[in-house]
Length: 172
Image (cartoon, rainbow, N blue to C red):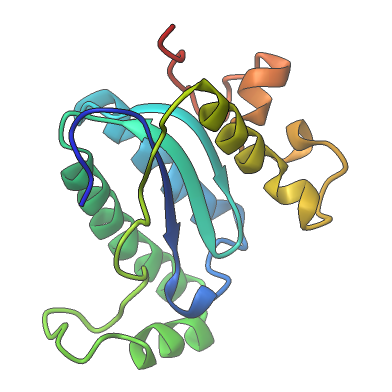
């Protein structure tokens, strides 16, 4: 469970690490939802990266658990609809197959349960987590520099480019 006070490093993963965020539409669904959560749900977002099957955040909110739950519920619906529109039957079949049996209210399960929150203890840990987030695409060999990955706050930090997703300034 996430406490309402403090900055957290969060990871949300697609069930079975399935590659769900492989197109710009899927990534835009996540970005639009994060922007909505910032604007309307009190989310303060300090760093993020979207990879093909998971995302990492450094964030805080008065009700962070509720915000994350709402984010995952909304994005799951939107991602299923996008997969249906794109006729990604293989992905829909996997989401159906890996759905927890007790989840009877839905046909699919997009996200693994939980967000693996880690409370940021100090400035050194905050710096380490942000660098980890920003270097994720570099470690995967997808880009040479963190700021070259479109779906990362590295662009905000290193290029002052807030065009993909605006983030919040870190508290001093």
